[in-house]
Length: 322
Ligand SMILES: NC(=O)c1ccc[n+]([C@@H]2O[C@H](COP(=O)([O-])OP(=O)(O)OC[C@H]3O[C@@H](n4cnc5c(N)ncnc54)[C@H](OP(=O)(O)O)[C@@H]3O)[C@@H](O)[C@H]2O)c1
Image (cartoon, helix red, strand yellow):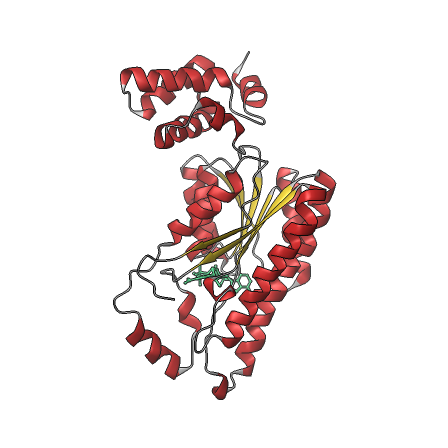
């Protein structure tokens, strides 16, 4: 069997049991660094072309010390195409890196093309696969193009992470109507555009996973957040409704991710001076989450065994009060 054949047969759905068993035994018996295990396994199977795939499984075994049975039942992303909107910064960027690391071919979508191009180069340098599709999620045609280009490049849309969002918080009395409208356009309509474009493809495939990035603001309200929280309550409600309709009958899993405060650029769009002041005085003692914390939560949901639909994940900084 040559390397190409080994890659397509052994790794198309689940890791080859022989490889995992051998790698795990070597790891346990000799306490080798995973890279050494990787090199040995790759050479045995035919060369560097499957290096990345072998590395992924060996690291997975090394990190979690999972049993062979558990590993083989996890959802394998090595033949999956994953679209991430808002991939140019923060949570989206970290999620793209994380899913690429897990073997997915990632599709990087946002408006700032240069940032996406840099991220693509970084992912490729690390052995991953990525394409860039500059997209404004408020434009339904552009989101349709995003899906079409993903299909052209990879032949499927396996994961859609609806992450793009904005949060120009303001007090209602200050009537920032333009910002209210922008939040509705990006946080609500943008998500719906992704769902509307991806669903026909996923239905046709007979599988898919939609991850909607909501927020703790999709469950609770705070001053200055009436409209933002309204948009995120929408995303949480939409996700529950989608899961009810799509998971049991169409094998399309749906997950709502609900982060508390994460250290990103999200607050940069706030123009209401009273809110800026409130934020500066209110969060001094808190250690916010890192984008990678949320990327890990998303990775957990999309790699869970196929029988598992992680419907909702609320992830808070330990010392965030509400
Ligand atoms: N940070 C937090 O504390 C927190 C907490 C809970 C939930 N969230 C949610 O997490 C998601 C990601 O936010 P973040 O914290 O990572 O903030 P961020 O760093 O500001 O990222 C926001 C992303 O959304 C993209 N975006 C904004 N408008 C867009 C549009 N019209 N079309 C396409 N992409 C657009 C931005 O890219 P471009 O500007 O390049 O288009 C950027 O990549 C948001 O939905 C946010 O509501 C964040």
